[in-house]
Amino acid sequence: MARGETIFEKSNDTLHRVAVRAVRDVAPDAMIIEFDRTAGFHAGQTVALTIPDSGIDPRWYSIASAPTEPVIRVLFDIVHDGALTPRLARLHPGDYLLASLPRGSFTDDPTRRSAWIANGTGVAPFISMVCAGISAPKTLIHGSRTVERLFGRKLFEAVPLLEYVACVTRERDDRFFAGRLTEYVEQWDPPLDARYLLCGSAGMIVTVRDILIAKGVGFTDIVAETYF
Ligand SMILES: Cc1cc2nc3c(=O)[nH]c(=O)nc-3n(C[C@H](O)[C@H](O)[C@H](O)COP(=O)(O)OP(=O)(O)OC[C@H]3O[C@@H](n4cnc5c(N)ncnc54)[C@H](O)[C@@H]3O)c2cc1C
Image (cartoon, rainbow, N blue to C red; front, side, top):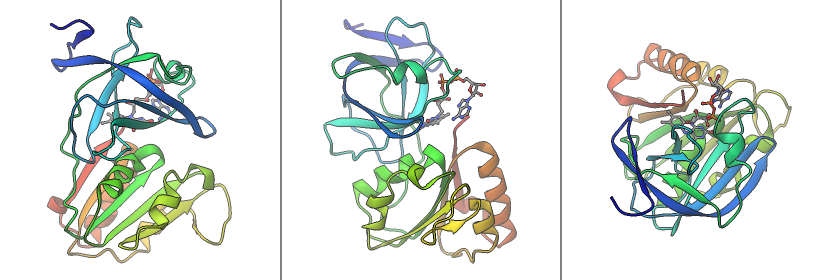
């Protein structure tokens, strides 16, 4: 085993020591951490992270950057009683992380019509997909408590092939749907030729899946990435 590597025993993944390049706030209790990319990945994939010598089991994070960039960016909520995220939030450029190779099959065909549905930081893989480039119409429905937690909003609003629908529960803003994303999906007419990618909390995913199936979407056209 090369120096600086350790074994992620639960999945037999090797963890690589990578340098942190940036850590910044994006909203109250939400941050982005950026670190050196050591391998290629497909938009939509995840990476497991932990802090060297912390004894904390690695946690999985969706990659929120383009596959062509020299760094990987991850968007995370600070879970105040959590083991890892409060410590991630205190890292600085030049510190080190342990990172797995990118993994996962939550990927999209950029040339095919899709609908992307996410709550909170579950929008991260769709940031990566947009950065990687799309050539077919996509719809993104993103649910958030507040406008400042509409992560990636300006990026999404600038993409002509992307229909961007933001659902905000705790603020009123005429530009956005006032209410939960599940309420939006209830009154939505989903395209039946699309593939559906759902990402975020288990509760949202189960509710949206049931609504889509009741509206005639085939269950084989729905894929999900659950943040548990
Ligand atoms: C495939 C996959 C991809 C993921 N991608 C992301 C991502 O891109 N961004 C991201 O922020 N998280 C993501 N997660 C969740 C992430 O892996 C961790 O679970 C999360 O960051 C909490 O880690 P922690 O060590 O701070 O808290 P833990 O010590 O693991 O948890 C402490 C307590 O907080 C609860 N908890 C965990 N997460 C949350 C939350 N978000 N809100 C409220 N309570 C919570 C736990 O149930 C537990 O009770 C992903 C999970 C999976 C499985």
